[in-house]
Length: 80
Image (cartoon, rainbow, N blue to C red; front, side):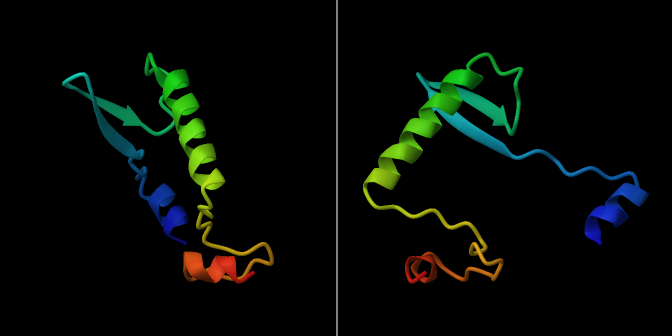
């Protein structure tokens, strides 16, 4: 309902945004910003970090279980 109301009023959601400091320089990255020169390197690094933490036992919180019911916490997910 919120999405429809936003469309009716001509409103748009602002993209997600992150700041990262590399070599004393602040870089701003917008979600799905393919114009960012280092975007491929950023996504490769994130994929590697994700893989590493999952190998250490981290279970990402998805918000919903595979049966569609709401997931309340990461501990809840481990009991599935």
